[in-house]
Length: 306
Image (tube, rainbow, N blue to C red; front, side):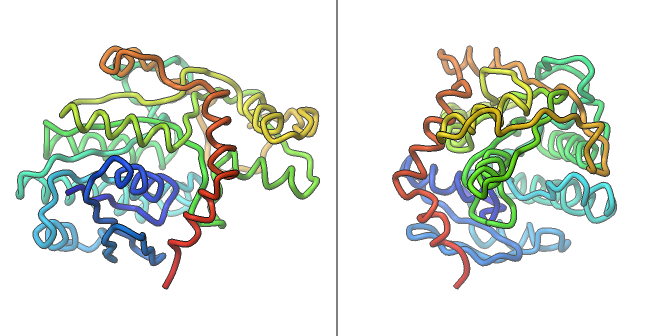
């Protein structure tokens, strides 16, 4: 059985559906926003409580724990560093300890934000030099995980996709939402990343689990591009003119926390393991649109509340 934390979020909810589709028995964990999936057990747990991780894992006895839950709002983390530390580091450490105590394998989902954006593209062995509290806590979460459970799997990424919570859209959803209301969309020309559709990420992650891998892997899109160009590609895929996306810069934004400017991830290692290339932006956005056309977003929304 796989236990997935953070199933009320973008990654956790989509990963749960992916795991179900691969035939896994799954238990989903949420903290605040109740979730109910058709074929999976869900349980509420506040993993920042000292005994929560141990109690949860002792009662469920999963074979795998995939830790998706995190404080991911970069500005919120900058404004609330102690709370970010509790969620992204302390809770992670307790889950790793609890996993070790029952013999479960542990997967920690990390981010390209552990890098400073000055020397990419980044490989798994490059030193982490985060520029904000969010990145610092995720990097510390990695260190805590490896200290408590050296045989863990750590996966760094940068995802987009359909979110179960309307108040927390992914970048692609936000761009599309702005376009649908007739608004012009600013896109940063000075921020470079390697985005991957969360559904593609989930499929690849589950394949890594099947192979019993350990260590650090980067699972990201095969194409590095600016957020400006990514927004244009979203517009084009959904039939909007690319010139509805306006060039903007990170320095001219109202974002409070500093952000790294260029964090493309090298995926040589995971491509060698899988024996194939990872999806590029065109492939990801094609599937992104196809999922909506097939009613996948309605399927996600139906899992909220109750």
